[in-house]
Length: 260
Ligand code: F6R
Image (cartoon, rainbow, N blue to C red; front, side, top):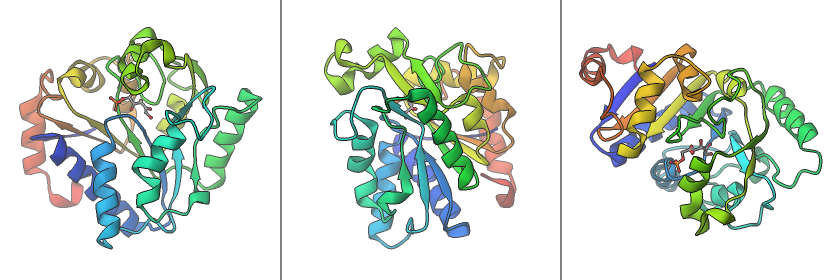
């Protein structure tokens, strides 16, 4: 795993945007795995600005989002479809028909999940998967104890994630209890993975992901097994890493061609 420590959240977003730009320049028809939540907001703003400036081209890209709340329609303001429309899709030139999210209203959830997996396979798999990390170490909505080889399926949110996400809904009781999420196994099949984390509230989860044992109790820890995983974090999120100075040293001394 390549650990890149930046001074602040803004620098994290800018570095992540550069990686997206490089990915699309190299492979214009890339399949992108996308995330929601607070973490990618700065990155999405950067991508919107780059699109405006003609510095990035999404016209041949496809995207699959990690997750969606069960019970929310795509038009519900708190649905992840609405989030993606508001924060990214209406600001970049990706064709709307090339964007996919799980359907929170799917009548047959198991079948829908199998079809979502098949749709990812049908386009050749995900080239670059973007992830945030939950304070409990979840990726997508694969909460602690999720199978490390799980596929897209329905999950029940932990009380902690419900509390963390209450800020978007106004109160905890309005947060749906269930989500459809890509599995840990689905995420691990992406050809490259980019994890972002900002702020001291993520420091514990980041340290467990990078330096702790690989275990279902910290689903993000399985990314230690991914061959091409970059983690870009700010100083606050790096606060509990034992080897922070080493990661900085490696970054400063890596040959340019070997960097994420
Ligand atoms: C979002 C997702 C989640 C978030 C995580 C962090 O699509 O899959 O794993 O990335 O909960 O959320 P924020 O970024 O709001 O701290």
